[in-house]
Length: 79
Image (cartoon, rainbow, N blue to C red):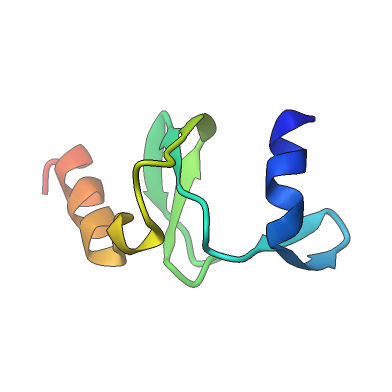
């Protein structure tokens, strides 16, 4: 409930269970594995993702880019 209250001011659209949030808050995410997925525009999906913590010390300009995601994927798969 606490996280919901933090995120409410940043919601700009809802479609069923999907909630779209303005890129104003940075969160740290842990996951078990990264895999390629044609389902998403990024072409990657995280298996079993979970939010670890909010990162108020970081701005959205500092988040990992798709290039960084690709590097992490390749490292994970020994490429």
